[in-house]
Image (cartoon, rainbow, N blue to C red; front, side):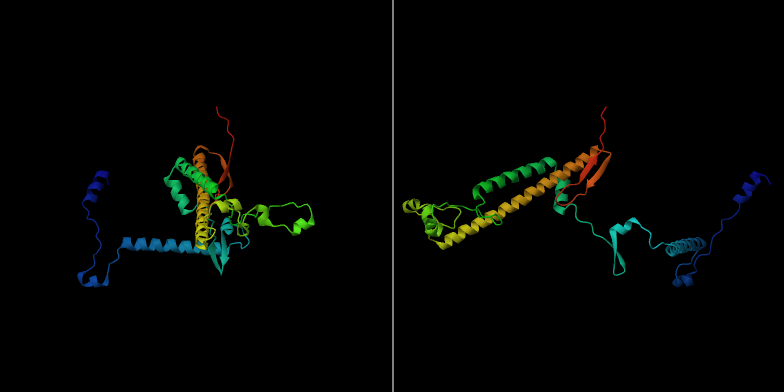
Amino acid sequence: MSASFRKALKSRQKNHKERSQPGFRKKLGFLEKKKDYKQRAEDFQKKRNTLNALRKKTLEKNPDEFYFKMTSSKLQDGVHVIKQKPDEVTDEQLKLMRTQDIKYVEMKRVAEAKKIERLKSELHLLDAEGKPENSHTFFCETKKEVRQFDLAAHLNTAPELVDRVYNRPTLETLHKQTVKGLTNSKQLKKLAKQRQRQYELLNQRIEREKMMFVISQKIQTRKDLLDKRHKVKVKKETVNSPAIYKFKTERKR
């Protein structure tokens, strides 16, 4: 049989059509065709083979074998739980690092440092919490002078002001002018409250300046990594410090 006759014979044949679902059986649902059965059978066989392979792998597994996920997971109440890694970057740091440039962060850090110096110069840190107490030694010639030593008379001030480390005027100053806050206890409490508020503000600015410094270091580290290819991480990144990398020395031609 020639090829032309075979083509002519094939063109006269009708395409095979599968029977559709009769109208009175529509309530029974979709009538499965051969292609649908074939797809369902292939999916079933694939799942069965996967389960058989996993079952065989479980039976042949060595319980003493080491795998790297052991270092990042632990068994808790019979269930494997992934160990939570410590936060390397806070949400606020990540937001600043993505939206702002290192020049802006450095400018804000310098501004905070200047405000900190100005606050320190105003407060002098005379009665800051956690500051070690200063000692003032007075020398006497005899033991009798030691027993009769009067600190208020020696400092030439009022006995009520001896415990002060700031604003301790002499008796001459007290006679010439009244010092604010010496006679009114409410004013003393108000001044102490204002001073405490200033110290809290100083602590907040110090923490903000430290955060800005860490952010600028992290941004600079990410910029340095763009130009370097061969690198080894020496220290991981944390919330309070950037990652430390060791770069391979390359000779520039």
